[in-house]
Image (cartoon, rainbow, N blue to C red):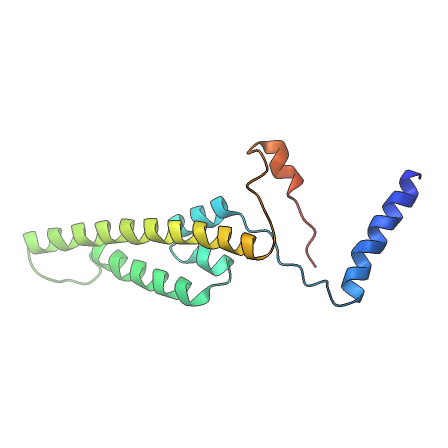
Length: 136
């Protein structure tokens, strides 16, 4: 077989699955990317995984702690305000860490449910290039 025939056969198989209703391919989720998104902005990784309810909950909790950390609401005087800032910073870091861990596990779970078995691949840049997929 020539390269042209092999390429045409591959395209025919790809588009025939779309034509017969099997073209709804779930994208491969990057667990590390989802985790980093949720650490930077809690809820972003959950939203990219398609879990909007959790995304809103993490974002809301992080916003409340951020208000306390930045002292946007004047609560208390002196040491009380410093204590509330500490609670806000600690709470935000906790929510960001929990959101990152949840987004990582959620992406791995989605990959397993959609039939992607990434445990057999070595973790190298070349192996990551192999995982590039065409989405419709």
